[in-house]
Image (tube, helix red, strand yellow):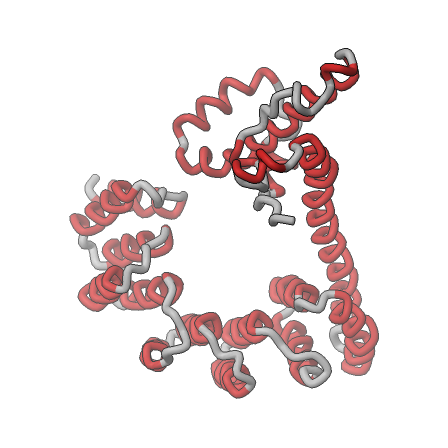
Length: 350
């Protein structure tokens, strides 16, 4: 069976549910004037059309004579883009059974995904609280990790449980987060670690201002053949966080020599931010040009970092030109940070 369409759960249970009639016109006006919202809402409208068509089918099914409820007499009003099969396939396959099957399971897939995520967060949150209560007792921490921690790890083979746990602990206790991560490292023979887990460990070590540990984790990942663009970026970020710009650039040079890794906008955004903070605008511009030469599309962080760099250097014209360039792309739109930069620029001329 073909793969179902990608559905954003926030659209279904947030934007498109419980909308009151009195707000319909306002939402329509916002939608028409906001291109990004149009892209986000397309899937919602597709689902709405599907639901509408299901209601139409049910109405015909229960209110019309039996002779009119045949699938060949009721036109399929659903948009082609929402179907899982091509036009040629639709000619040979009966549309009613396929659409009935879709209507029966589509919302269940989405709901199951949300429910699984909520269950994961709830389970991890409870376990996090237990760890926090015993944070000073090393023996209790080890016991909890060996029993409940390992059970969680086995339940979520993709590492989602550990990543969620580290995410929660990172906000409340970096030292405890590192204890959990080190326990995971010791258990890697029972279940191999993922690159996402190594990235999280490097990030935590960097925030703890322990760059030697960050490098150790990076090296371990490389030894286990899990070195990729994400681990490189994490190590660069750890050095940047601790103000070690030379080491950050050294990692970048190593990255450029690694033919197995493909550069991303994240890599260049860090370098642009690094040079911008040090008021090295020539090098900042050189990195941006290199990014364009490699045909890597700048994102919002790219432009915000450029604007911040020019703001730091008091280069108002280039700051304004960068903002105009961003607006002209038609694919990147300013956020609150961008507007705050512009407000600073306006205030400087008052």
